[in-house]
Length: 581
Image 1 (cartoon, rainbow, N blue to C red):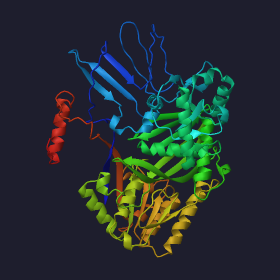
Image 2 (cartoon, rainbow, N blue to C red):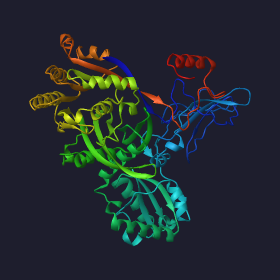
Image 3 (spheres, rainbow, N blue to C red):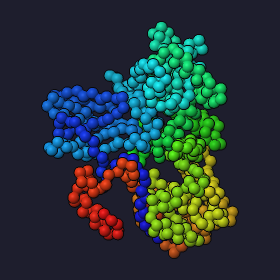
Image 4 (cartoon, rainbow, N blue to C red):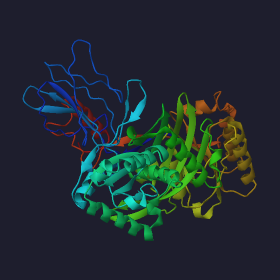
């Protein structure tokens, strides 16, 4: 059975096709205006004459104005919660929204609010990137302090402020290497030497960013210090010292990425600056910046401390390709209740021309069947479910799940095996490099992480593992991902030995994957695929955006809906599918 199946996923932003964004009243004085709305960040414009323009250093695009028209092309240097809207005047006093990249308030997590005005690298005259300093803010009460922080603090930095001055300055940890200094104003002016020492320790020794500088009355600072000390008595992890900071930053980034709904976290170092981006709803969004050395150090700590079976961070070599897995228990709030989710982080990195390029894939790994979505929960139709369930009940052949990177192949494979009626009464072995999801009824084998293994050695190890569990009376097998000729050969041999097998593979179609299998990259003989019981099913899937259920607008809306031409096309499609328009 061959087929191209398309699975939908939730998205908080408007996608192409029939997607329509909600309009907002505009007060533009010119015919076209593109405006970037951001909390506590104001973008200035400067006039230009002729070809003189001010080019943005970060992001995509150009911002320029003249004294005759009011045209702004605003660069997209957004964090996760940017809003970029384009309004076009119709000549009737109304404005039409042409595009929107807004993340609605109801899907914004606190950490997304946290990073809205995070320090952004800027360039000096010598083109060396630096981090902009935080501007001081004065508060008078605890409620004002919470509003200035924008996010509850998650810890306190220890051993930075001298004990005698602890009532004048408190270093609050906001997560993800972000710090807020809460102090009496006289601490900066009268205790200049101590203030400079604190800043130097945070920015140079710890390599953290001072995100907020907040002036507060002495009584408020003392009360804040006492509250932190009280929490330290029954919550030791609330305090953060220099030795534990690297592991904490790695965990913070992984947990924050999961809470904001990211599927991947991209980390890059370039010119001494570390840049972190997240993929949310299929789109890459800027998130945080930090010092490049801190990024490398915290990734090394994640490898050396959090990776099972690894205790030596010195084995982390930024110049060599590396892959490992870390496990996390992340507290999330669902319907007003706090629940803990088991999350696996699959880490890969390589060295690029001027730094390190790393990606962390976030995988929820609960083995509770109530939390593992069925095929219908993933977006498949009832017909798809019937066909795939029938394919899984066959006692022969290879089931291939094919799709582009990040299309949810492993997620679909886990759903197929987790909800298989006979899975509880079968011996199912998996060979993974490394293991991503945990299966309810399978016995999983994950190849160990070795930094000095070549791709050829890893392939041979996986082949040897599959050959071993072929002698262990299996009913089914999962070979993992087919990346090389050795893995492709052993997957087919497993299915030809009378055991149903499954695997994933990168490809651009159910037929195209067969061309790739028999091509020069995987070198599977065409006659091996010609057997009637070699291939069971080839499933190709990709992710499609799905409009947000809370802010979507009907396509038939009289003013903000589709054009008459698109309405006719949609009406024909609905008629063919037996649906009401």
